[in-house]
Length: 490
Figure (cartoon, rainbow, N blue to C red):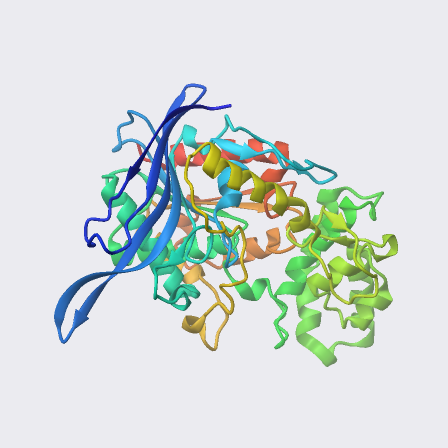
């Protein structure tokens, strides 16, 4: 277990509020992990907004308390030492997954598919932590973790694309200023909707706050939602982009016993253009063209031609996860299709449960609630919201009348900052944000060809949280550590 100095200190850094207003409640502890001696600081930061009435400045009004946990290497030169701001997605997720799953100095031993750790679970050292290369700041957006609006304030302004973006940016600005880190190499890392946030933040921080970054790390990023959601208006993007994932899932579960995975996935990818063409033709497709497509899709996805025909060639993903192992009376996970679980019955059209969360949520919940109190010594009687639906409906009013797509924001950030490097990580069995959907989106960035050298793509043989898989976690941390060191320009 990591060594700790048992002299936690309470500190308040909010210097623009009066005593009767909310103040920061950080607690600091000291730890070691191998040769790393580091300081952990956890608690809530008060964020405020400037108030003007009748053209007169009235000061800053506290609006929300945002929970963060930071790890800083002791006695480091802050001008040389990188800092990485990390968050998960949802919307509605705390940062616990990246924090205790892969990046932090301690992690939960949750196990992996087929060998999940039973309660009461276990927290272990993480010697491959990204702390080896960068200080770390984990941020819980408002309404997740311990983050809440201050008394008498509403949460709704933070439950949407722009409000969330601005509040997280404010946390980053305040932390950077208070810790004198404007001259440090700076990175963002976001997973899933956290990738949406990170891509947009890279542009917002640069264009609005003048904070230029060294790198952005996108873990299973949801960048263009048109590639991921099977819309009522029948977008033709998702179906061909999900087909390689369906084929890989079928292979994992033994439904392609005589095929090699890479060959199978390549065949599904190669069929994408023809698949798209057939969908675009609609009723103009000939009977022979449609029949050939039905049998090709059925063969790759390992479902019956009759099922593909009845689905009108469109295998909506949550239906597929209910169908693929129906003969075994199982459903697969969505965020990681390696996972399986039982349902209450097997006539559901769509998956009625998510085996992935059923397997992982308990370990992360128990681990964080123990860790924050027993090791980081922070006491708060509020419920730490690991993942909440209270943020919904999430507002995308900035995208009214069009698909939610932040590739233009990332493109803008990269064009403005030719030094900005981008790392993209994807899981082969991620059934929420498939590899090919990410590839498609990255291929449509509006940047000069020479800037594409600033992008690297890594694929791992696991799901959305690829770090559950031990081999993938080790390789991923090596990849992230290398990326940060190469991109720090030091």
